[in-house]
Structures are given as structure tokens and as C-alpha cells.
Length: 349
Image 1: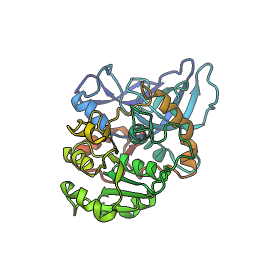
Image 2: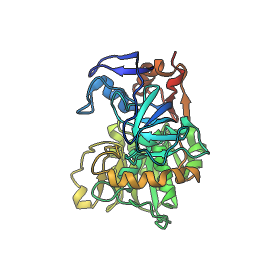
Image 3: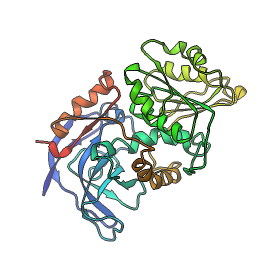
Image 4: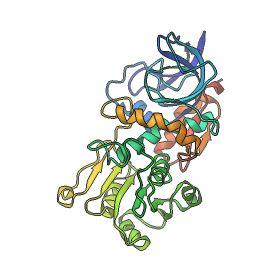
């Protein structure tokens, strides 16, 4: 039997929408009918700029996947046909999310059953995007700031202040929720004021309007919100160099700044001031993130079901896989704000 898939034949090539065979699950694998695949800027980066090394072509992109279990490979336990699942996928012909059916190895801990309180589209926003915020904030030093690598419910930063630059982004929304989960008393975010009510529902206590306050003025503006030192910051904006500089200017001596940037520059005075910066390679499937990723996915379904972690708001795009090339261009033109772009491959004509 065949299915529709969006194939990248080689580096920097155009996408090709074509029919390919539906893969069969091997030992320890499940076949998932993909009902939602969230799009990420990294998908555009791989297709247009070949930014990820060692991708084997041809390949299928799409890292954030949700769907229903369609078939079980030999030896699979803990899953049944019809189970709703969400997981971190990988770039490969059989495992990428931009196809109608994908395989997943269930020995990989980066998979969970979708809680009953959210749909497939919402679930697909979680895997990569949450990891991008969680790894540099929660995982143990030296990978991350070590705020709570084991998801210990007793950990609390009550009375402390946190700042999220880019709180309206998909990653920034999860950073806000992580700080709320950790019990920070004041959570300031720099974002568009039009998202203010929503960001406060996630846990932000103050929203500084990015359309009114330029990044170079942020450190002075923050002082009007709180006199307390800010020792924990997350910068979700990676395409604007000023964002990292603005975050560092807000960071108290001895503080920690995490960022969605894979390799943020280290300021000259970082060592003298005791300020640390953590970047991220967001995959929980590779070292040194595997141990933390296992802990995160063990706790994730419960955190989502109880509402501690809320998925991004979504824009479900029509026509399935056919719209993906144009949708990815929106990341480069500023055409995405406050929502996660999601496609249902089953809608492909």
C-alpha cells in the first residue's frame, strides 16, 4: 500500500510531494497514522540551508508528531492499536512526520500517550518546542542551568524573579510555563502586548510590550517592574542578536541565562561576573540529553493532563502536506506570531 509524503531528495532541493510505500514496523516499532505534524523553523533551515549535519538523503522532515497507533511490530508492549500518541520524530524516510504514516521505536523514551484533555494538533506542538526551553533551563550542569533536572515537585523558587524574552513565541510560551512550574513569584516577559492576556494565563505576571520598548531599553524598563535581581532568564528569540545582548544586560551577577540558540557567544566579563549562558541542541534523543529527556517524557503526559504544561495555540493549515513549503517560508517573513503551524497529512489530496 502507498501513502503521500513530502520528500526532500537531496540537500537544498525543493520538496517533492509523492506516493511512497507505507513502511512496516520492525521489532519494537509501531506504525503511526500521522494526524498532526507541527512545523518548526529548523525544518526550513534543513531544506533551504542544510543546517543539520549528517542528514541522510532522501529524507522526510517533521520532528513533532501526533497520531494513532495503526500497527504493532514484534515485541511491542505497552501500546495497542488505536492508542493516541505524540513523540519526537527524526529526519528519515520511515520516521519523519511529513508523511501519512511513520514508524516509531518505542524503546526510545521520547514518546507518550496523548492525555484526554488535548487533541492531536495541540499534542504535536509539544515535543521539540518544549525540549528547546526545558533542556537549557532544567537539565543538570554543565548542559543546562540545573533548575530541576529530575522534575522534583518539591523544588520551588518562590520569591524569585524570572524573565522570558520572546514570550509570545512557541518556545517562549513553554519557558513561561516552566518558570511557573518552578514556583517563581514574578515572571516577566518581553512580547507583543496583543498576546498579554494569553501569556498571563500561562503564568506571566508582567508583559513588557516589545512594540513600545526596544531591546536596548529593556534592562532599564525591567527595573521599573521589580527592584529584585533577575538571576534566571530565557531568551527565545534567536534570529535577533540584540536579544541575547539585552538578556545579558538584565542578568544579575551570578545569574544564569538559557537560550534557544545552539551556541550563544560568551561575553568577555562572564567569568568575572559569575554569569553563565546555556545554549541548546534540542534533541532529547542524543547525548548529553538522553537522561534528562527520559525524565521529561516520563513526567510529560501527567504534566499536560493536569494543565501544568499547556500546548501552544495552533493554526491548523488546510490541504495537508501540499501547503508545507509555503508555510515554512512564513517563519522567514515574520508571518507567524503566537501560534504553532500544524498540518494533518491525512488532508493531503
